[in-house]
Length: 361
Image (cartoon, rainbow, N blue to C red; front, side, top):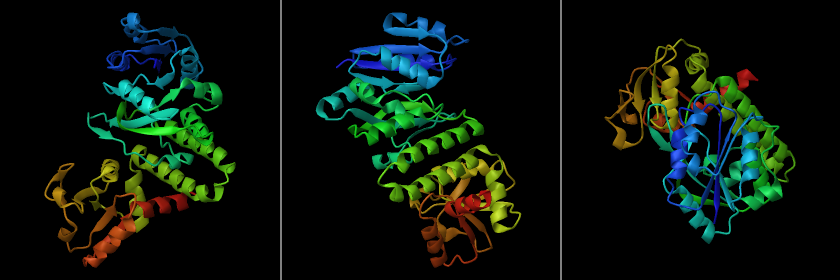
């Protein structure tokens, strides 16, 4: 099979070369590489021109945004399968070969895989897979890993340019509802860099995403079942944005919840949410004095240079604790009470999220 790979870019001089090399270095040979540049004003074009002998199509002209550029690339593509990798992302070494082999044995029209997040400090994390059926209200398919047969674009359309930030979500949900056959390849296909988006940008993205979701849910026979799930996704997405982007937000919210000006707190949980909460509290007046985790393997270790202990080692003075997990917060609170820790004043992230949602509305 011939595979067309599309990269769209505008002023991507700092990262575009890594993207290009990840495509040119693939173990699969029958690849058509298309680059659509929005008439960059930095050194992007100079970098692309270094590899002109290996690029099938290169267009540099003004466009109407990232999805307009992607549509141009799709219209130029001649491969049976099309993949899109942005200029600040890159492919795993054998990504395309793995995708093609999977297509050959699958009845799928669209194949996607795992994606790995790369943080500004160099740390990496494979993003957990979520059930495909949740695509009704969240981005269940990481777009940089997606490969689609060209005939699907021809049958069901390209990116909708009415959406500036979430046309990829709109397209994938549209394909899903049209019963395009999706299939999942359980391996890392692409890497993406995190960070760099402003609060305003993220807020707009959440609002656009929710508009798309509601557009399709309203016309679905599953509407009554999907609406509560959509509402839960939306409130968590907005709450997470505030934690990550608004300095001092979490510290202020905790103090409001307890009706007390706190100076220290214990965080229960050393996972993703524990990390996010610690980072947020660094911008407020509340100091994290201890991490607690149920996993014995973590006891005695340091997390952000703070000791991790088991629940049984909590101090018996009056402490305040933030249960920094997305699910099972109430169960953890009950377990701590069952251990005899009645001196603790506790709040879960879900309780804080609900409290914030109520006061915001």
